[in-house]
Length: 276
Image 1 (cartoon, rainbow, N blue to C red):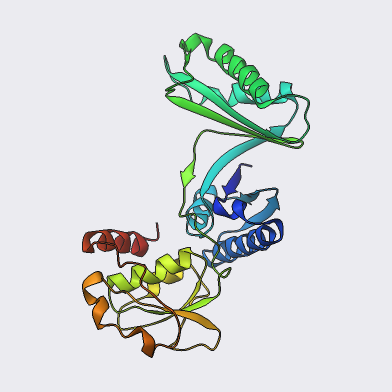
Image 2: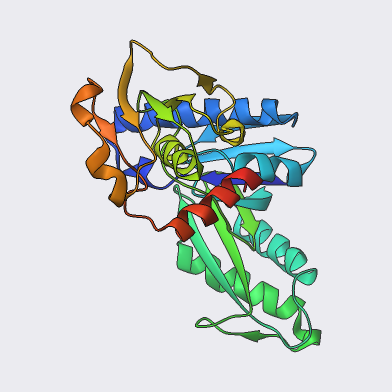
């Protein structure tokens, strides 16, 4: 069965205790999202990665892409960390992914004490792939290859994949407290979404349909006040700013879309509604 590798980005910049808390929140959010979407999966945390096993890989990827804090995903095949196993597996893996005359490269990284370097993995696996596809007249191109094979070696395991699926990154929802978000239009919708991306749990009110936000946080709820809220979030543009009396709110007020044009807001709002 294939495994999905989920990576984070800025979480790795945090101190060890904070990073661990954020990692646990990220795993919890991933499990919640998969359950909400009806995807049966097992989610494990190892080092700086989440490893997800699911029968329906495509549905699992579509679900995980909506989890804030995940920077990228890769659907990988697993083998042992023995060099001979990596080379044999890479050769077999490449046969279904290289076509006549294509160029390729191997990008390897390693974590652990396996007795070889990342450069060794790239060189040996690249040689095995070349020999396995010699009948197709493939070429090695380390600068601008048509196909890239990625190999990650972690302790006793190695993972081989050929694609990075970019996600929204940010911070895990629930890691930065609660905010009160007013959603009266697209700008309000986008403002709430951007604060969720920064790790805030949104409590939403307003005249517009905010239900698309539930795709990114199944635990989001409606309301106009919360005693633990840290700030208000308004969908205000630069021209409307003078009409907002921030002193009347009693809490800090954020305007996440104030520097965005109407076209940029409209484009992001469409992406949010599509659940992409």
